[in-house]
Length: 348
Ligand SMILES: [Zn+2]
Image (cartoon, rainbow, N blue to C red):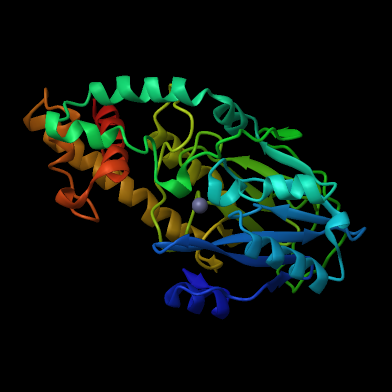
């Protein structure tokens, strides 16, 4: 892996905010601040089409300061809120969807989200809570640890869906073309040409469904410039949590591993992630991410081989956790237990 932006790489290390920066002649990265110490920055991206229309990828964390950063960025481009044509959201989490409502109120942009994550947003939170409780009840959690799993149910604050469900104007499915005309940009020499066999015959942006982090998480491929917007599917320094969207009949660990393979055709692209810094070397990062989860699957299988009737709690306590098993509490503990259950399912 190789960072392709010194400013973003150094800001990631220092926990600071890098300035708005150009990625390609028509692609820009806009770092936005978040109030979480462990994850202080989310990356929004702006793409400018041949007509000067601006297309946003991930609105980013909602705050007055961040909205001012958006306005400054548009001004820097010689543009304005009235020129924002579309806002595409990689997945339903608050740090990505955040300012969608501001874009809706203050620009003419159409909002675009995957069909699956829109359905997840529309689930009645009380229904989701009930389903989650039934799930936790099956994990063999000791009585004195049960209560903390009911607090902030589901995820950490930044991963929780927004309270009032946003209704997108366009529901995205696998393979959709976002209909953005970027013209024939030769770019910086890294660009390819239409019809080069990369799965698209346009210079526009294509939706690649990559479930795992959430069930409707998408990556967005821009073959004309060889860039892949990955949201939280692939991040340079963090292992994204899994299954942090709607519950599905499928196994989020298996979904995630398959979705890492799905994007192998973009291994020579530059990765524009939702957090951290942009980089090349996607194949190497995909392998690291896959191994992180495959190791857990192997560990769970080994525990079950010794003790086939072990509970989720019992298996989880014997797996390797980055933070250490004894340090996992509340939402982190709940996420660890959910992942353990999925690894056990894979082992059976
Ligand atoms: Zn995120």
